Length: 152
Image: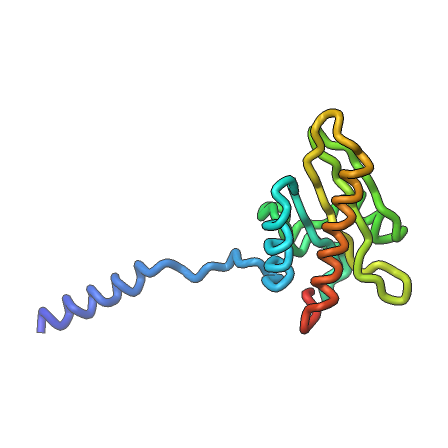
């Protein structure tokens, strides 16, 4: 009888020592997969983030990003500005250019924005870097539109 109790206790301890289920998975896994796939093609891309208002919410959120710490956080002011105005917002960062591009137009209004930060070395052709960032945003928009279902 004692060995039955010991086995039962061993099983309980063994079950209790299992790794807990992960809860930090990307809440918008399909959108994250698109971001990761696009980012893998651009070694000079420092950051790529998709901003949108998730269904049932009223706050624009960073729903997918190459920077894990940004995922699920509220969008920055420049991202909100691009979403509200439908115009690009450009910020110069140390060694990079951050371009926020309105994407996924519905009835002439953007429903999401792409935050594209591309490395820009000193003396680089700024217009060429902007064009590269726009092309990356366009690729993100095309992937979103080609998805079988809404990504957020």
